[in-house]
Each structure stands twice: as C-alpha cells, then as structure tokens.
Length: 123
Image 1 (tube, rainbow, N blue to C red):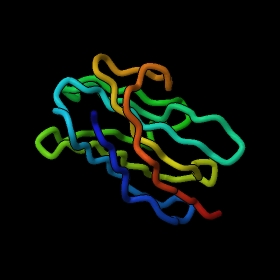
Image 2: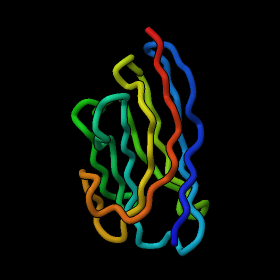
Image 3: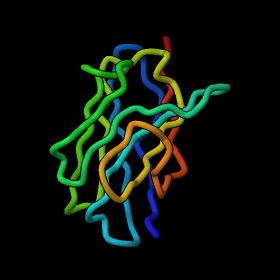
Image 4: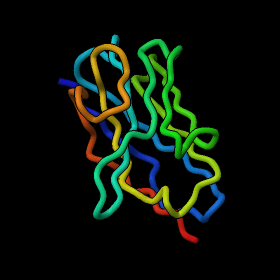
C-alpha cells in the first residue's frame, strides 16, 4: 500500500501562483510514476500532469502547458505541482496518484490516490 497526502491548496487570485505537494508513505516510492488530476464541481476528474519515476519524462494537459510544472524529490517521497498564471477555470480539487510503471495521462491504471486538496482561483 502507498498512502498519498496532498497539501498546499488554498485561495489565490487570478494570475497568482500556488504549489501543491503530495507526500507518499508506506511501500517504497521507487518505481512509481506520479500524476496530478483535478475535478471541478459537476465535472469529471481530468488529467493535469504526470512524471516518471526518474523525473526524466513529464506530460501535461494542453490546458496547463506553459503554466504548470511537475517535479519530484524521491529522497523526500514527494511530488510537487507548481501552478503559475492561475485562472478561475483552474479551480478544482487536485488529486495526486501513483502508478507502478510508465506515467499515463488518464485516470485508469493509477493504483493509489490521495484525498485531494482544494485550489480556488478568484477572478
């Protein structure tokens, strides 16, 4: 089992920045790709970003490319999502997820999920 705990969400104005973190515990973090997803009220959960175990491969949704970055610190068992130039449409609950193997841009295949952290961007 891998337990994931997100933190760092909050309220920010349009154009602002926020960094959310996801700390993993339990089984070894080694070999796990990590993904960030988000879900706004009344909408399906959608892919935001993903990163391979080594950090050498990253993927981003078109809607966040150039604004968001994903990184990880394997020594700390933590993955980060840096969000810049935030827009009201970025408002959602942000979830991190872990996948043993190559990263994916879909919710399917991720083995473990966190409980989510709320990000609200005011206009």
